[in-house]
Amino acid sequence: MSWEEPSAEGGARLVGPSADNEDLAVEAALRPKDLAEFVGQSRVREQLDLVLRAARARGGTADHVLLSGAPGLGKTTLSMIIAAEMGAPIRITSGPAIQHAGDLASILSSLAEGEVLFLDEIHRMARPAEEMLYMAMEDFRVDVIVGKGPGATAIPLELPPFTLVGATTRAGLLPPPLRDRFGFTGHMEFYAPDELERVVHRSARLLGVEVTEDGAAEIAGRSRGTPRIANRLLRRVRDYAQVRADGVVNRGAARAALAVYEVDERGLDRLDRAVLGALLRLFGGGPVGLSTLAVAVGEERETVEEVAEPFLVREGLLARTPRGRVATPAAWHHLGLTPPPRTGQGQEGLFGT
Image (cartoon, rainbow, N blue to C red; front, side):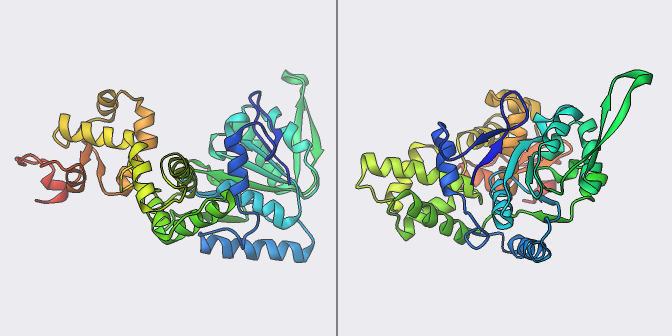
């Protein structure tokens, strides 16, 4: 199967496992090809299986699908599985690549009947294109505006039935009229450690890597509940095992390799520890403003807010409050530091003493 992804010029381009990008080829090789092979997300898999089976029984296209959840949980993979299960080609593009209604009209008008259109980061699509998408999803028709001003005319363009699979990491930013046009909405949850162990074992088989039970458990425990991270860490531990050990990914090799790559036992990386370290050592655990914290670690505000904070909050190491970012007692414990005496109305009002 081939697929398309956004090109640098916008729109979409055809790519596949034979592409020059080695990382892309590896990721493509590790992707499950059907729902039975897909690990985790049992509720979404069951619901989606019913949707696809019913569509195949009717001999029609599947309903439009919206997948939401954090990056790396399998939204793109599920979109490819939907196409494979329906026996249809898939075209991949993204919201940021569609800045004008004409961009979307060009993609929609070239779709074949039954084709799957995967629109990643759909919440970042331009508003004019978004409004065009309403009609395309509901009536399989778009109006192409020709000309400008009073002389402009709308030419209706009929579209073949297709399935739109939208993916978003911020479902709350989708306007209700767009969200309501999806026939099925699935929310992707973070993976449990045992599910990630299954991911590691499966990927190791595909990569031809020998991995022990304790080695897989060590990698899974540091993967932040995310299969993409588990696969990336597996490849780095594999490299370490091949160069500095006997090639077997066991617990010792995993711990040594991940120490080299600065991933600790809870999955925190260099940026995560830098944010916590600055918050604790420079600001006494907070509260401190996001911009000040970003300057302290030498990163952009958006990087701290979108890359580091979500995991730190989910791990219970950091809290967002109206007064700023505050470290929890668990953060002091994790970095092996002693919290300062609390006086006045400081953190004790949030977490107790």
